[in-house]
Image 1 (spheres, rainbow, N blue to C red):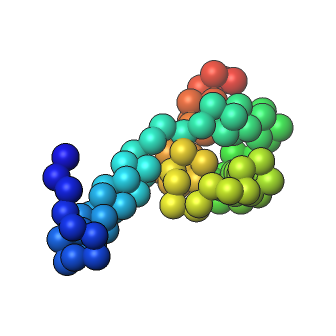
Image 2 (cartoon, rainbow, N blue to C red):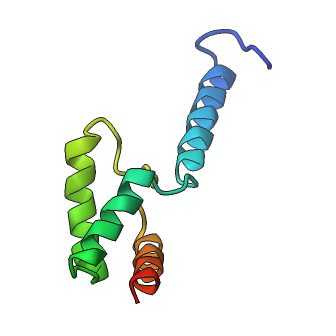
Length: 94
């Protein structure tokens, strides 16, 4: 790993780039197992519209993981991911 003198242009750019790549990696994480179970509970209780499930998951994530940023797709999945999991649970039920 390269070391640049502190407070130089290169050290600032490298630190910003490293932070960017760490944040980008955070968006590729699979959905958390507790959220998968929560989706299963919601679908089992008759809540299977994506926007309704999204709302319940956001509230659940804020209550159980208050320190996690909303950019973290592990605890704040996309609408597409939620839809896929709803379909998976509906197939298991049906």
